[in-house]
Image 1 (cartoon, rainbow, N blue to C red):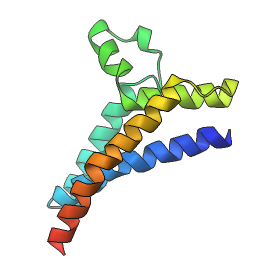
Image 2 (cartoon, one colour):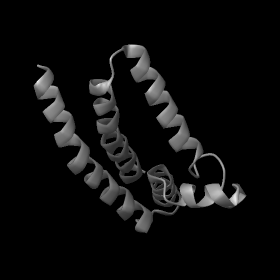
Image 3 (cartoon, rainbow, N blue to C red):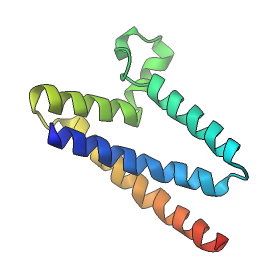
Length: 115
């Protein structure tokens, strides 16, 4: 359960770089809130967090299968329920590292320009 929790924290920290970038690019707090809520809801509802993927319409199934939240939820369930570190966990780590490697330098660069 500890590893599953650490994986969820890692995934949330990696995604938070995207929201930090949105915050730097936005002009007002209400814009940041609106965009962040929209992105979070869209990513959550287009994953397997609430319903199984096979119950979604066919055109949404392919989106849900490749959603980073789907990998995170599947990895968390596998680790918490079965104690297995599956390919979903590996994919979650890969996507998280890739996201941080791409978005973090851009965010820091924009932040340094604004100071």
